[in-house]
Amino acid sequence: MAETSEPKAAEPSITTGNAAIHEQYPFDDTRDFEDARRGFVGTAEETVVRGEDGEVWDLGAYGFLDRDCPPTVNPSLWRQSRLAALHGLFEVTEGIYQVRGFDLSNMTIVEGDTGILVIDPLISTETAAAALALYRRHRGDRPVTGVLYTHSHVDHFGGVRGVLSDEDVAGGVPVIAPEGFLEHAVSENVYAGTAMGRRAAYMYGAALPTGERGQIGAGLGQTTSTGTVTLIPPTLYVTHTGQTETVDGIHMVFQLTPGTEAPAELNIHFPDHAALCMAENATHNLHNLLTLRGAQARNPHVWAHYLTEAIQLFATHVDVVFASHHWPTWGRERVVTFLSEQRDLYAYLHDQTLRMLNEGMTPLEIAEAMEMPPALERAWHTHGYYGSVSHNTKAVYQHYLGWFDGNPAHLWEHPPVEAATRYVDFMGGADTVLRRARESYAAGDFRWVVQVVNHVLFADPGNAEARALQADALEQLGYGSENGTWRNFYLTGALELREGPVGTPTVAASPDIMRALPLPQLLDSLAIRVDGPRSWEADLSIRFRLRDANPVTLRLRNGVLIHTAGTTPGERAPDTEITLTEADLRALLLGTNTLTDLAAQNRAEISGDPGKLTDLFTHLTAPDPDFTIVTP
Image (cartoon, rainbow, N blue to C red; front, top):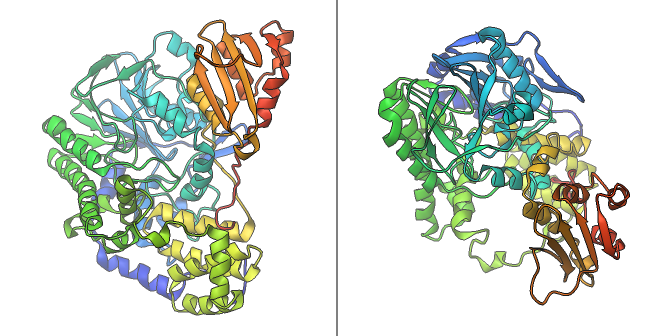
């Protein structure tokens, strides 16, 4: 097999498998296309959204989806991507509009007495501003009189400064969010943010070229925009189901749904419009119970419970249901069917995974054995375009039992490189493994190829033949995937094997998010950067006397950085005391100012050894946003 750095055509087994999809599912059911186009008002004349560093979003990037599905794409995913790529301003019902296709998520706009309520202002300020401009071009230059974040994921708040300013908030414009929003929004993007961001590059395929052999979407939307991520902290929290708020004449009844698609999330009933916003709790796909970029495992039992509750609370007063992704569903009967099938989807995965794990089955065995009920399989909106049955069942297992499957042989396995070296040696060396892997490739067993050749790559990452074969096999698995994020993972892995790491296209830990961290969380974010082994012998203590808050003491000892508020009985005297404001302490810790400069400006007073702060910083490591994934 010739080595090449270019994408290849679909192999016969993939072409045959994709062609068979047409016989499995009701492609003649066009209601989703009718719904997705319903209420279209218009779209932007300029297709490219730009920021200071160049292109942020291209509305025209997915025009190729209007063609017939090629052999290199699963037809079901092609259909979903065509639907998700439709872009423009759409009327949901009188007084409620959505801008779709301008980012991974939708921006919803509700018209009030004097202005508009903006719900979920996308990921980037640039795309959010473009979406608002499109609305105003068709509906008039109405001011933003409220902003609402439905939940704590960045694609639902990151673009807020594209629609709202600090001056607007100071002038009384409310920013509404579910209880716990700020804590989860900032911690998710900081504590494990570097690793999540790097893996998100694979999940959303932002570095892949768009096209039939590249990125065609992520199932939930097309991909993530790459502009400026911002955050304006909420000024009004929703704390309980049944809470009502009126903003600019817009009456809202809230359902709080913590622990569903996000740790902090809510649904919104607009009784005056007979409309229900389901945030991201009911969209036109099976969602993630454990997103491939990494997150805390979600509980589908809780998710299903809140969907049942939503039906009970609102269904008899709703004529349209819409969400922060995809397109609405109209008609009371169809709304109930949609919500009920979504509920059954998560309940079934939860209950059947528990049944099988209690029979002793392992995560891999459950994922392989799980079959969905035919009635759910026939419903397009239950398909695994974003989450998948396979990785969601593993998430349920993890939620209840953790990573260990109970087999003691898996309790203390060698790490990847050491195991790979031994595997390859046992299998007769790299040449033998690759020869047999090429035979498996020719037989269409690409799943086995990537599992086996991965050992060769981790034993010898410089093996050009292994890199080429692994890239080709990953590519074929991508071509056959119904799941958009699986396709992107496979194809990005192939891209990086051929061309090198693509890094992290979208960085969520923006200055706004870092500023929004409560001081204890900011200090925690430093603690996870301590190089433990290099700090075993260190013992230093620094007390910050804050002019506007209680003092804070940092103690590095035994490789652990502990922070305490106030004073602790029996603690030793600090090596250094620094008096300053909390704002200047934040600047110091974030590296946007130095102790020398603060002292020179009479903004910091120092007693003791000022070099101890420098010593502390030497024990901190910098996270690597470009770490390798498909090679060691």
